[in-house]
Length: 78
Image (tube, rainbow, N blue to C red; front, side):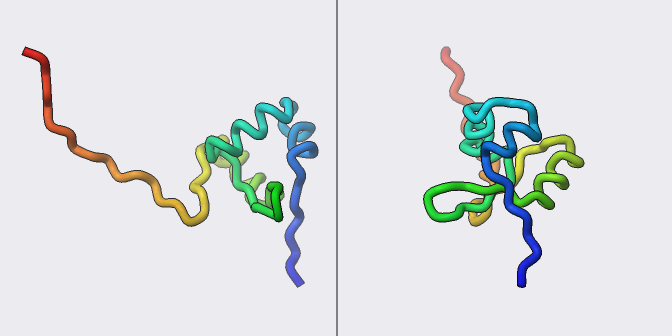
């Protein structure tokens, strides 16, 4: 059996001391480690602790890679 504690968005608002709107915005921006369950999201308590210990750095989204930097030609106006 899996030993995973999942936290709801509402519970996370209490933990972080912020509003549900702020938490949902952080989720949309990929800042929080989330698990998608049906139509909602939950936060893995262990990964949340790691995220907090890391200073709240942006969390990589599962299945998405970070964009690679692109060299663009210098097109200055003359």
